[in-house]
Image (cartoon, rainbow, N blue to C red):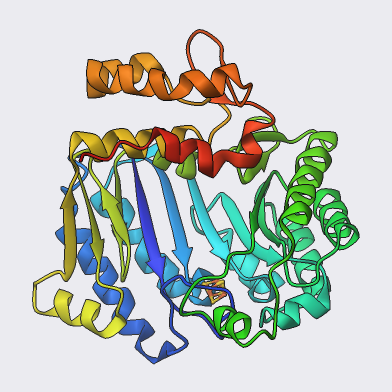
Length: 377
Ligand code: SF4
């Protein structure tokens, strides 16, 4: 079992909080797609013929691609890889790209899941974030996706926006949960260095919200999604039964994946590698037959740390017996030693097979996870 991630680094304009690799220079799109397909061919053995059970077209804004460009990508993938019968095939999309015609075109492709960046249903906040759609466009786009026959729709929301109140967030959640979605990802706004948001914050033009309000917003998120029948299966992810993101779960479960395109990451169980985050250098590397990337061989210590960090984010938690069989007795003892005070304090729970965050633990997950990290002296 394995996955494929395709990075489409084109955006019509940049959102102020975003630190993903993307560019507004769309003139190299054709050259990029050619390079991407060539990379898929060059690296077709990376996953050692494992059947592909998830494909994720992310970005950037994949919905900036034409039908012909998407066809070329899918044709290349299906030609060089074995795709599982019920593979989850997701495409990220911007609401205002999802016209009726575009959706009809997307239905001719193998895509069976749409992940839409909505962020908020508040027009003033959308404007602040420099998003290029309105609340109504996002609302209508979800309905249109559903009418076009996409059953599996996910939306992303951001909370903790400057000046946000509990009431604002509640409205966002009520609108989101009234829509025909199967999955919701909700992330707290973060201020990343190098973004416009960071600059505004440095100039005191926007302010981070108070920590107590952050906690209240997260509590509201958990309560509202639960009332709507959603499962809270990862710290920031909620879904209707059976509709978890299989692609993201694969990352958290350490399943190998091939990432193609500028800045895309790949993982094969022993090492991680990432392509250069530059459109022109990526294209040049492929043209010269010399893929531009960096690689890290993963030590046992790094693998243990990554396993803890990802599994503790999920509602299942981590398995001490998995730690014992994959990383040995030393890390097994270490993890149990670190878990002990949190189990006693009620921040972790143990069901005999897995150790997971308790309801209180979820609110201070970063601190708990950092206690488990092993750093050699
Ligand atoms: S559309 Fe997405 S990838 Fe592009 S700038 Fe906005 S958040 Fe970043």
